[in-house]
Length: 274
Image (cartoon, rainbow, N blue to C red; front, side, top):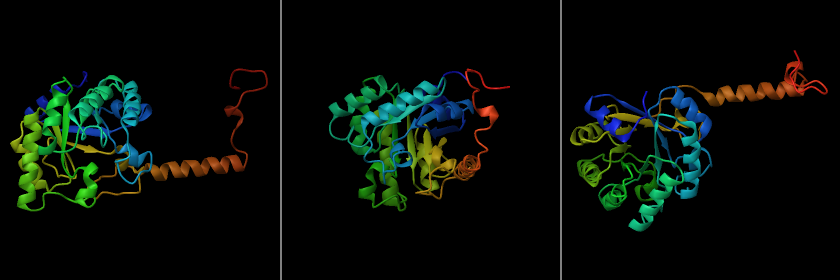
């Protein structure tokens, strides 16, 4: 696999090739998911929930996103790295938005940024794109808007709401975004949006008709139990596997089985014995 770029994603849509995306927040996990062949890594502000334990994504800062992005970038060789712009990093003014997007790219090493919103955020997308920074949009259920939405609720359930989301999708594309995440909408609406846009749609809780799919890595690996979205497919329960390993370690230490002779150095020796 050659280095993945935003142009490759647009070509994948044209060629009818699905786009798999996963989140990652650090060096070690990035090496694993890229080694498995993932072409796009999203450094999501979901890190605030799955790693820091916040109730939502709102407390995450630009500095934290830069830190996690730089960790991811050091672990990847070919995957495209897209980083969330956190709450208040782009909503206050175009000046703030451009400065923070630039910081995430310059200091973090991201190759694109992601912003939430549609019609109301179009001018912001356009301003960032004019700086030669690729932008991924995010419409439908936007986690930074959960207080307005009344929580993590499906959006676009009636035709009036659906038409508003379609307008958001068109505004994001017109503003210059190279792709858009469509979250928490009925599958039929996601299909309509995907057929309408020339840029790729990446679904999460939006059914099978988008050009690609994204999941939070902790959700699909069974590492985060606080929230269990119905749309997540859990591919393995690493929480149970890790729990078993930790209990075995505790028992080994308690009973003197660890460390064994193969796990320590002999006196005066810099090498492991035999």
